Length: 292
Image (cartoon, rainbow, N blue to C red; front, side, top):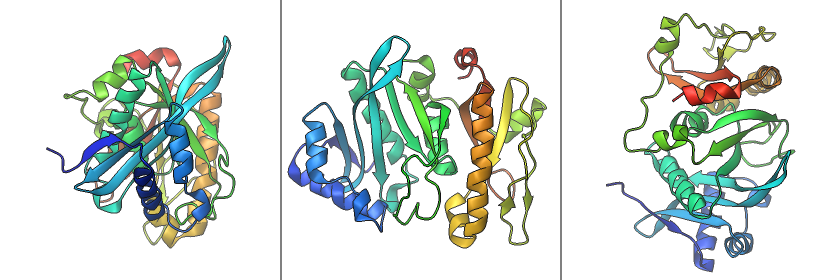
């Protein structure tokens, strides 16, 4: 049994605890904290706030609310998942997955079939959770989505984000969330199929990978796009290189999405001396049903 319990948050006391958790996860900018009164208003109007507790301490939460998206047939309802945070001691224990799974269950009960959220595409841990484990996909790159951010994790870099699409009733998502989920992909799987990455990375003297000067042309049904495996640590130690990676990855994904590719999987490979991270790009929506 996991050490935590997950429940809906509704009281002012719960929302105050959610405020405090935000300050711990995203330190340095009070203006980025969603206040308790906004959380309560959202919950009273169709929104969801779920908290994870170890004994009486909140160690994680996820917050979202109903939204509308534009379609050729007019506005369509969805759930906008705005924020998820987990304290440092529980980030590699499956709690983020458990919170998103609980959110998925609640949104289905509300009669909605689409959940969206954003995240920084250079964060490997988030990518692995969102894509490889949850089964979300992405075809939208949003430049400077939140403008200039001032918290300790985002300050100084353009707030570029992936917008994720989580189609809650698809077999793909149901299988990823089942008791027998698909085994994670490995880099060796693609090597055996003679699929090579779009570009080759070369490391600096300090070991950090440099982005190439230009993006190679995309062709074929599948492509692999590599990113630094530990971008937050890279940002702390070599900020100019982190900025170079921001603009290079922007070019990679905007080019791929414009050419009709979709991010459908993520590989976090630990077989070598250093971990490596790869996005899997698939051409065409018709291929999604064939990808587990």
